[in-house]
Length: 130
Image (cartoon, rainbow, N blue to C red; front, side, top):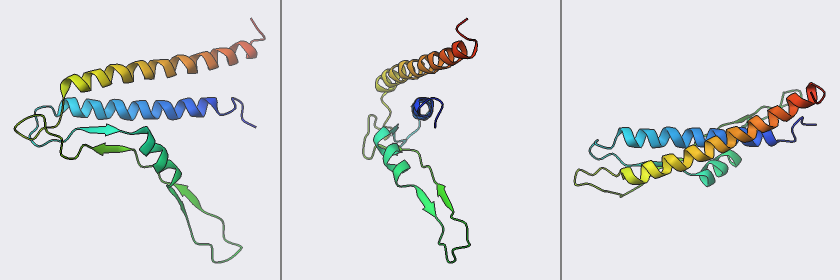
């Protein structure tokens, strides 16, 4: 039985996605003047697919052996293939990156507010409604 019914772990996964997306956007902005740099993005769909297909298990040759499984997480970061905005081959569009950064910041803050609400509710219950 989970104390929060999986809500906190779902919010944590959302925060991990938002954090990775923020890092990717920051990397794109930092490389805006780098020749032949291809802009990167994070795909939630790709992250979900990678998480579902990333379980590694060992071959169990004897029933006395312990079962061994490990989740290998690979982030859903990908590069835009042939995208070029400049003559030098750079594929970063600053207007798009700034808009994505603003949208991702709003998403991240909404998740933080939701987690704070959950923890405040738990705190109220622990204190007996005071």
